[in-house]
Length: 274
Image 1 (cartoon, helix red, strand yellow):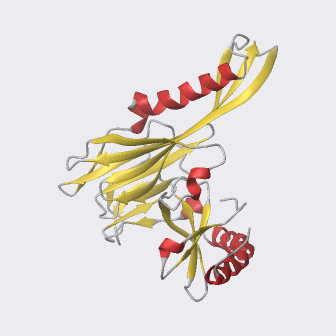
Image 2 (cartoon, one colour; image 1 turned 90 degrees about the vertical axis):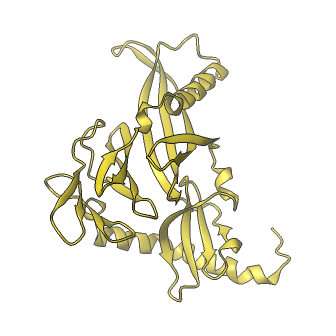
């Protein structure tokens, strides 16, 4: 691609350097702090997510006083890599957890200094029906629908990616299924199918939420390469002089190099694997 403006060349050069440094940086971070041992303080520093041998919990910061026990979840006890995503005002959070084929999220809100559970995304038919409908359409388009005995679920993931503001969260839903024919003793695989969606959830003061926007993600993540797509809050890499940082898109399918002083000039890192 021809570069017409010389002002973009330093950015491209820095991007190339950071692409080389990023794997080493992330590897170092992972080795120093295992995800299962990470605590996550709320933005206002009043609360802290604490995973330990007795189970994940929310405690009052600086104490061992348990404010909320998170070990009893309907999706099972896959808490090894569980994470808490705090709302910017610390009055809500999403608890992402799961293992194997099932990954779920639970939502909580602070009321009168106590944490209460909100409606679960797993209980909303629209969130599960849309990916299922796409998979069935893919099977039909492949011309094998009449041969299929059943669709075997390989993975179902619900995960809050980001809070855009205190009342708006981005929920990621991903379904992977395998079309099969015959019995377990004589099974034929007919193909793999999947669908990914982003749901924008809007909350009112009482914690009731509804879906205000639905976006089907493309298989190659082209939509993540638009500057209109929000970025994840977590910074994957920060340059030594704090001039640039690397962040993933909120849907986790693209990496961006973001100038600290002018975030609007962010550039996608081509062929980078988030």
